[in-house]
Image (cartoon, rainbow, N blue to C red):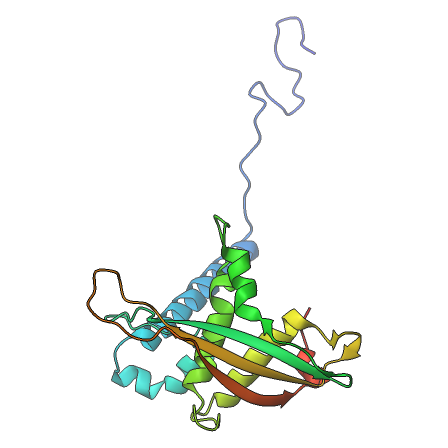
Length: 224
């Protein structure tokens, strides 16, 4: 409403209809600043650890190797070097089979599952492309090809990581019976030379079969 001369009645809204800008209290600002600083610090530390992991050998990495490896392994392990990338020259597949009280099941193509999920997908998942592949590379780099014994301190972690990836896909039971053991095998095939090359080599697949690993309820902790 207005009075006779058209002036506002002083209801607090004024003629602009706007609202006053929000004013943050000092405690709220302190929390926001602390959160931002913590986020930036954590991000910088994580990126720094990845940089030291892929950089050429240096004193800083040797001094803090345990801390860097604790950040990188196993989820963020890298297989490339900062100044000398090494492209893949082999096609490697990973299969698994499980044992129950009823017997041993057939081989399950874990890599074939990933390929099926990627093929024809314009935006394939990073997990489908790299999770299983990097887990096998991690295991292979920390275990002997002769007797599958661990050759690095984190060999046990590599075995547990690979096992849990497979068990998450297979589940707790096969054919209605609980899974009691799991076995892996890898198939390696050399990439064929290009048609214009004079080189030639065998592209026959070579299998590496691991022993049986026992499976307990502890192996399923945290898995969906």
